[in-house]
Image (cartoon, rainbow, N blue to C red):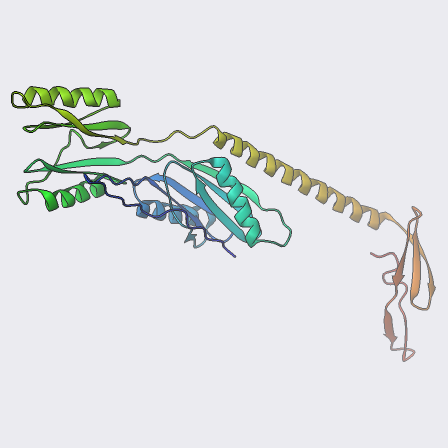
Length: 318
């Protein structure tokens, strides 16, 4: 049984000037036993195709998708026998905890669910600004340049005073981490971008004051931050170390179990025994002193045309 956990779908929230935050995408595909996760892709469709392709190439069978996720997130894969659970959370340790809880809810036959993989989807996003006649503009943040440009132009055309006048402002648009600021006076508006909020504000106020009519006062209308790739938190390494530890413990337990089974078989093959039977109820005693009760089966003797007890075929339990 595959447990599908819905993590996140596309978020779309528009402010007055059109800020919409959506992140880079990841996706996980599985074949019922193994999982393959793609991450840091520009959009949902690319991440899904990459996950399906990677799963098929690595595991040689048809795969299906688990739900995709957004960036800046730890993605934890947990498995039990026949069960795969995927959880995303900005806190890697919380993601691991919740994935284990959900796995154990679905699979309750006693086998312990364990963490198999942890990823950090660092993401990033594209910012586009469209400007039209009448000082009308729309700023859009989205998963790719194409999407951000398209939506920014579409929304700008709805509010501009002259249809078809909206143009993407390339000096503002881009990906990575930076600040955008807008300064306005009654006669002039100025946009600019910089690596810090303080510098972005300084640039737009300077341009606004230089170009505005005499006596007009420039004011900061707003500032916006475009998120760049997010660095993985230290707890990612902590969970990775935990996965290695859990795998080593499992391998050690398996090695012990195999050795015990081999020793048991070797001992059984090497021991001789004697039997005392009353009808079909027998006690066999081994050369090491150990003894056990056993029940001999009834068999039909074709020569005597009668039933009897077979106390020799499995005399020492081999």
